[in-house]
Image 1 (cartoon, one colour):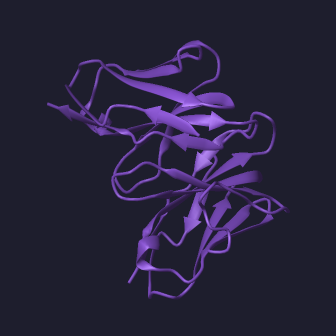
Image 2 (cartoon, rainbow over the protein chains, first blue to last red):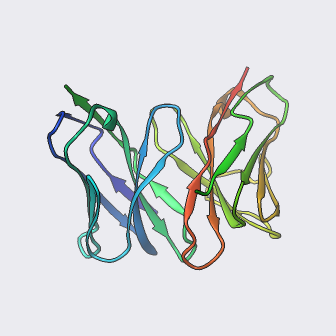
Length: 111
Length: 116
């Protein structure tokens, strides 16, 4: 089985920085994804980490520590449109795309 | 960029009927597709892995006779919810991976099923 934990809700103000943490316990770990999902819509890809370290992409960065079973998504210069659910997903096994999702962190950005 | 399309986006059906949902990769060949289910305010749950030309691999607890998956071509996978009941009402989302060891993964727009 797998346990993927992330906070249920977070709030922040425009222009701020927020870090969303994700811890996991799983067998056959083969990478970790972060997705953004607005209500009623499909998830959109944000980042993918398979090796330890930080991946930066514009206002979004993602970090992975495989030994600690830990990842975080860092969002900088927050905008109102960043209000959404952020999903941490672990890829299990050799089949890329076989994802197991956490329950998601609902981020609300206030003006 | 690559697009994965699902049809229908919304479907309402009577209890006991079967519903088919299509997942198409529009500009790439998808050797592998995945089907997820999402209940309100919950995360996505992987149901099955669909491989072109072979039987789907179902996750533990998912009834393969109730959720029929067919991946007959490199651009189309279908999910049929047989004898649907109200508890099957959910948001069904597919994802598709382009061919190759490091193929990118794309999600469809989702299909919302409501069983009356």
